[in-house]
Amino acid sequence: MAQLKLRSIARFLLVPAILFVQTLQGQNSIEGVTSKLTSVINHELVQKQLPSVYIALVEKDRVLWSHAFGYADPDRRIPASTGDVHRIASVSKLFTDIGVMQLVEQGVLDLDAPVSRYLPDFHPRNPYDKQITLRQLMTHRAGLVREPPMGNYFDPTEPSLEQTVASLNRTSLVYPPETRFKYSNASVAVVGYVFEKMRQQPFARSIDEAVFRPMGLNSSSFEPKPELLKRKPRAFMWTYDGRTFDAPTFQFGMATLLQVFLV
Image 1 (cartoon, rainbow, N blue to C red):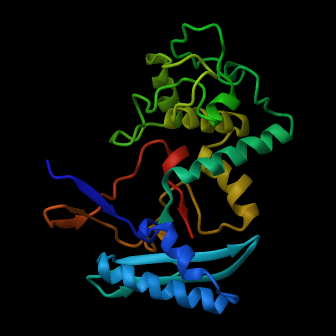
Image 2 (image 1 turned 135 degrees about the horizontal axis):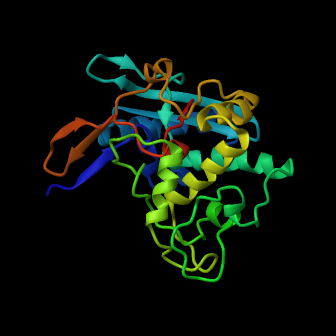
Image 3 (image 1 turned 135 degrees about the vertical axis):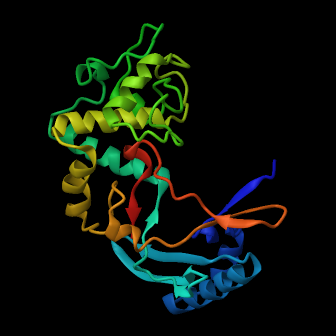
């Protein structure tokens, strides 16, 4: 089977970090930095045949410079724009955690209480004498499987968050809680469901109200809203034997993890 690579719109991240460090050494102004970065990125666009690259330089709470290179849709010659939006995959876990930590600060949730306090029907097989907590789930130390039986990456049924978490009752812990790090999308799905239950409204709407809107992230959402999809650039995949095709556009499972559109 041919091996595949994702030609990401953020592909500039694959440029060796040392190249950027060497490029920026000795630059004393933002203009000098952006000039050097522009040169490097334009080189990468041509050499790696990338459709587009997006970059922003941020200092504290200020955007010093942002720019879009290439085309959001090469075939239609639509230029890339800093107003384009992008799926940020598992970086969206951070927004789920922010929402939960707000409830911790309000005294609604306890990070170290058994998660069953908030989800009494959540009971994956746990042969160990230690219970699962929110802190463990949020730090990938709960011992849960990486993916749930329902609501995983390629589940075409688009189950609810409740159904996704319920499906974990058919699984067993891989490790005793708090003993080892094991990356787990399933863990953060549980965290998101706790947030949904405590807020008593759908997860995506709750995150909009509690996190995105107060932060001014008005072009961000855990839902694939039509007005945002119109601003999403095309992405491509290619094989080592030279075939190129559009990257899949299906909706990922587990809205709590992988469906943020960010600009």
